[in-house]
Every structure is written in C-alpha cells, then in structure tokens.
Image (cartoon, rainbow, N blue to C red; front, side):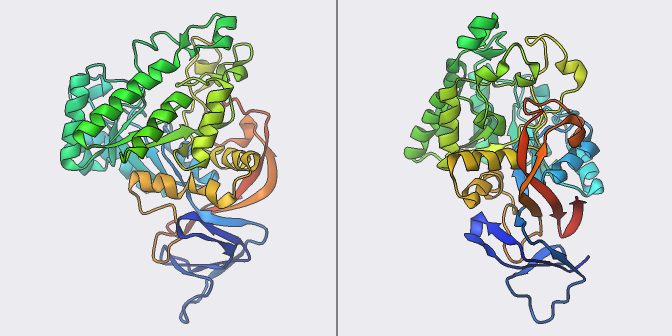
Length: 416
C-alpha cells in the first residue's frame, strides 16, 4: 500500500479542532502523521493539493443502493467514504444471508464502506420482530423500519426493549401512517392550490412524541431520521434538554427547498417526508447549525419510469450522494457558518451517531480522506452524475465544491 504525502492543502478536521494549512502523511492505510512525518517515513507519491481542502471522508447516514457498483462509484465521486444503507434497499435487509452478501460485495468493490441497517421487523411488515442478533452478527450496525411505520405500539415497545437489552441502536423515520394516509405533499398552501392530498405536520410530531416516550421508557439508543418540521425539531430539543441522548438528522434537500419548489407538479420535488413550509425549512437550517441535527443525503435513486408520472403517482426520492458536499457548502455560505462547523455535520457528527471509527483525520485512524476544491463550480446535470438515479430538483443548479480525490483506507478510489 502506497505511502502518500498530501501537501499545500488547508486541512480541516472538525473532531480534532484542526483548521490550518498542514501536510498529511498516510501509510499502510492509516493516518501516519499531520504536519511533519516520522523520521523513517518515505513518500512513494506526493500530491500537491494547493487551493484545495483536505477533510475526513464524508459519512452519509442514509443512502439507498440499487445497483451497488454505480451507487458506490457515485459515493466516492461525492467524497463519501462511509454510508449507512437502510433496510429497504434492494434486496430488503431482513435476512443474515442478504446482509452478508451486501457486505461481501461492497468489500470486493473496495469503494465506499457500507454499513447495513437491518430491518426491525420481518419484511418491514411491522408484525413480527426480525432476528436482530443474527442480523447484527452478519454486519448490521443498527435497526430500522426505513419508511414503514410500526402501527402496533406494543410491538414497537418490545422491539425497543429487545434492542436496548443487547445494546442495539434503533433508527426511526417518524410518521403516523393514519394521519399521512394517501398524502403526497405538505398539508399547506401549495397542496391546497394543486389539489394534492396533504400530510400534516402532526403526522410527524405524533410519531416523534411516541418514539421519544417509548425510548425514555426502554433506554434504547434512538435516532430519528430525516425530520422535516420545526415542531418535530422542538420535541428533539426538549428531549435533549431533559438529558435524553436522542439523535436526529435532516436530509440535505430539506435545508434548501420548501413546498413552493413543487411548482406545477414537479415530480423531482416529490419526497417522503414531503418538502414543508419555508418556516419549517428555516427551523431545520437553524437546528443543523446549532448541532442539534446532522445532515444526510437521503440518496434514493429513482429511474425515469418512476418519475415521469403525475406528481401523486411518482416515486418519492432523488439522487443525493454527489450533491451532499456542494449543498452542505451552499448552506454554510448562506448561513455564514465556519466551514469546519458545516463539515462536522457530514463527517464527525454522523460517524458519532453510527458509532464508527470514521469522520476524522486522527493519527493512527483509517485514512478515509476527501480532497475538494471549494471554489470550483459545476452544473448539476444528468450527465454530470454517476449515480443511476438522474432525478433531483437541483438539476440546472450551479453549485460550488468539486471533489478532486477520495481515499478509502489510504487507497485512491476516485480522482478527477
């Protein structure tokens, strides 16, 4: 494995409080030194990164994989070196053999590191608990229902009790299915004007409150995924103030878009949870800025057949792995946040939530590294995206922040 010397870059490592021009030295797949190398270090390759930023590889809390090779290729092209794969990816992750196959395949490809999230119930049907112990042994790092709710709250209580007993984390995307039934957009002005069935904020807050109450009762490690409303964020804030160790994340598109971006039935703006009001969006931006929530891509590649339909029939979701970094940088510029704070939300914060040895440039730690040019602009077009999913409401946007190189375990897995 090559010994690398990356020089002349601005090195930002939020976890270790580093933000200055420093050289980075890599040996045997790990960070060998920062600033000055050991006396016996001999670089086999020197990379001049003048004008670039070197930071930990991004850690994505939610990225669905269809075709695993193109999606992991998209991940490293976006500077993402570790990603959590929800259980509703294909195939559904509710059997140990399927989890092992995913882990094996991703290891063979040698691109981004994949961390499977196992199904909390069999077939995500919300009727019988999945074999969490077997799934954990196969490689699952947490358990989730993905987009499917457990309607039976007694079953959800038992799932949390079981997970707490063995120290497993539970991740839920809070939504009350009865309140959200047949809804396709935020229950607000735009849905009313377009005649779309709305999903009220209460669908999220009722489910959030239930999950928090059950987590407090069981002591389970709870993470709430892809929150979309100011009211739900306030419930998280109250729980944290009360000493509850709950964590949460927000999808990067919810930091930039609102219900107004649906326009006239733009199916690229169909998401689950839906884009909500501008005031909800602003509350999410503030919550992420203060560190209450991390950022995820919610990468959900959808093909043309799933999007070129009437809004209410189109599949929700969009490509996001390659947009996670530039959209995070855009949010940081708009909110005048220090770059190190913004990068923490997509590196060290999600790594901590997932319990991974990732998201930092600690000496002795894995050399998962992203090099990017913060000033280089590019246009979001289908041709510019490596993911099989070409649909996103950001098509046509000019964004800044181009990944020039990605390293995983000290190996260069992407170079532009």
